[in-house]
Structures are given as C-alpha cells and as structure tokens.
Amino acid sequence: MTRRALVIGAGFGGLALAIRLQAAGVATTIVEARDQPGGRAYHWVKDGFTFDAGPTVITDPPCLEELWALGGQDMAADVDLMPVMPFYRLNWPDGTDFDYSNDEAALRAEIEKLHPADVDGYDRFLDYSRGVYEQGYVKLGAVAFLDFASMIRAAPALMKYQAWRSVYSVVSSYVKDERLRQALSFHTLLVGGNPMTTSAIYALIHTIEKDGGVWFSRGGTNQFVAGLVRLFERLGGTLRLGDPAVKIETTGDRATGVTTASGWHGDADMVACNGDLMHSYSALLAGHPRGAKVAKSLARKRWSPSLFVFHFGAKGEYPDIAHHSILFGPRYKGLLDDIYGGVVPDDFSLYLHHPSITDPGMAPPGHSAFYALAPVAHLDKAKVDWDGAFGDRFADAIIDEVERRVAPGLRANLVTRFHYTPSDFGRDLSAHLGSAFSLEPVLWQSAWFRAHNRDDVIDNLYFVGAGTHPGAGIPGVVGSAKATAALMLE
Image (cartoon, rainbow, N blue to C red; front, top):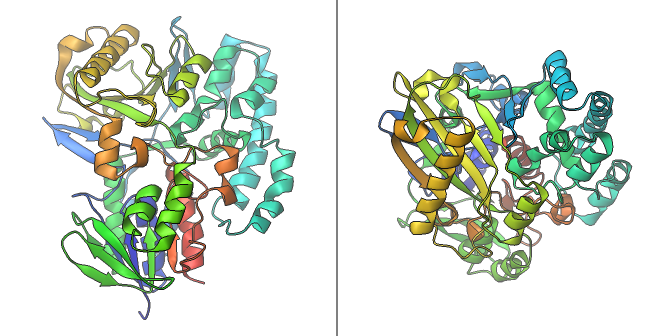
C-alpha cells in the first residue's frame, strides 16, 4: 500500500468510504471522536434494553452488500437483516390506521379503504416515482457534482420530472385523499426535508422501499455498524475511537494529515471528513483561509431541523404496535410550517419505533423497547430549555400522546426512560445548530448546490455523508461514499 488516507468520523458514510478505500489498497485510518463507531447510529444499553439512536429504517440492502463484495465477502456473515412488515403503520387522530408495505394486494386494499378512486392515482404516482428513481438514484445517486456543467447535464431529467415542485405537490396531483397525500409524502422527513418544500425528486424513496423492502438489523442498527467495522478491520483498516480530530493539517492548498485531541498525529495523502460540515470548515480548517470562507457561506444556508427522541422501556409486549408507526397529528402543513419556521408547538406528529416486536432480544423477557421521535426546530430558531424543565415536559407530553393513541396504560408500565434533544446533537456530534440531517434537502441545496464531495481549493480534501450529494439517510450517505471514493481513487 503506497497511499494513505485519513477519514474523520465513523458514521455510515465514513465507514463505507473507508471500506472502499481499504479494499482498493489505500491504507486507511478512521478517527472517531466518540467512544463508539456509528456517528448518529449510536446506541445505549440501559436496564437490559438496547436503544438505537438511529437511523432505524434500513433500505436498499444491495448498496450495503456491495461493500462486502468489494473484498470478496458476504454481508450475511456479519449482519442478520430481518424484514419489517408492514413497513409503517400510519395512524391519524380520528383512529384511521393505514398499513404501508410493498404487498400489492394489501396496499391497494388499504388505499381503497381511504378513497377508492385513488387506487388508479397511486398507480400513476408509482410510475412517476420509478422514473425519478432511475434518474435521481440509479444514474446520479453515486456520482459527484463538482462543477456546474454536471448540473446542466442533469437538468433535462430534472425538468422532465418537475423537480422544482415539492413532493407533496406532486403527490397531490395523483391522489385526492388528504390522508393518502400524507402517507405518500412524509418520507422526506426521514432525511430532514419538509414535504411541502423538498424537491419532488425525493419521491424516489417510495420506489427504494417498494423494490428493496424495509429491514432491521438483528440486535439493532448498532450491530450493522459493528459488522461494517469488522469488515473494515479484516481488510486491514485502523479505527481510533474516543479521540476527536482537532485540526486538519495543511501545507499551502494541500491537506497533509490530522491532529487529534490526544496529541496523536497522522500523515496522509488524502483526508476525508464524515463530520459536520460547519465544524469541519470552521474548526478543523481554522488555520487555512478556506475554512473561514466556506464557513461564512454555510452560515447563510438552510439547515434541516433537529429531533427530540424519547427512549423508553416498558413492561408488556404490545403485539398490536407495529415496528414502525407514524402518528400524524391534527395538522400537517401547519405543523411543518412551525417546525421549519422555528416554533415548538403544543401538538406534534411522532415516529414510534418498536424494535422488540421484530427482535425480542432488544428488551428483557416480557418487556418492550421503544423510542418516539418528534421533528423539532433547530437551535437557531427555537430558543427553549431542552436540557431543563421544557425538555422534561416535552417528553411527558409524548408519553401522554403515545398512551392515548396506541398504548393504553403505558405510563404505569414504564421501567426506564431518557431523552435526546437538539442540544445533545450539538454537543455529541458537533452538529451545527443541533441539526439532525445537515443541510436541508431543498432543490437549491441539492447536487452541485450541495457541499461538494471534493473541496474546490484543497484538492486532496474530501467530504462524505449527509451534507454532501446525494444527502441523508443510509442509502444517501452510502451513495456519497461511493461518489467520494471514486474521486479519491482516480
């Protein structure tokens, strides 16, 4: 091995990139600030329960299997993926349930229950989703946009599929029932996007799920991370945990290595960042003019909201609560306006994760593990005391809502609980404004307009992860790793 690479951050994107580099013969070291690999895919073990921080929706297994295939290995030797069915159970305040899956007959029956005339409209939406999937994911999802010419080349496809429209707008042109419009547009929230403003290209998520299914890693997402680490280390890679990078060393316009908080220094021919974009430029590159210049530009951009995640374990097995539930609130557009506008409202919509229904090992016998996630405004917009009384009240309100909607008697059955707030995202992940998904995925912050996978000035400095093309979510950051690796291996 004649070339050396340093990757800052052991999230999904950083691990996927490091595996690609190591498999190609580049001696690669990952430097991770936290005591565990995974980045946002952190986990805790408390009172016999295993709680994943997220992400907990695994889609497009082939993009992950490809990482093992690079070294002639089999993903199944390291990871046990379990199918989740239904994908999501959607619930509205009026008591309506909707099981969302890729079982054609069952899905059509669910649509017909809501609005029989929308079955044909759904078929037309599916055709649209398949089209944007081919253009936006298959053809462009793992290709770097380094110059405006690359954006021009992609423009005809963007025009054909009316990328300037929002996901909700396009969905609404195909189906009329408001609940179905919500069911087919909420997915953008899982990657930090407002369904009312996120480009219609993100309708491709429907096809990713439909074709590849929705999966859970036995033992939690943390076990998928552990499998990636085992693969990386078998290939000869090195992982340094609990030692935050504090400086990207440069000579002129070349990155030369990384220095960490412990004083360790690694020299490298190439450096890649899987950390927060703003932190990477403003802090790690503080000694180079490029750092301040890009940080000033990033400060003007729109950043995705944060999350309030309430983890809890309870007595009982709750067989009627699906693995993934979406509890829609009484408002949709109004609530989204609040979240993206900086208001923390009294009502909310929740994503309820119940992993022990699929994998009982996530909880002690006779118990259930959960988390309830509420999108909330990031720290620059919502000036509230997440670490104090406000955060406690918000968690209690979530308990009340889950108990009222799907889990009668829940509060009396709680045996352990804790919550994770926008302030925690900022502290633990150096996430700018506590954002959970980096830059908001609007059209004018996508592809070439998003952070480039290679810096425009320091040409051996690279980026990977949610802030780069194509964006957040496991398939997105794994695609960004493929795009970045191609640049680094040129």
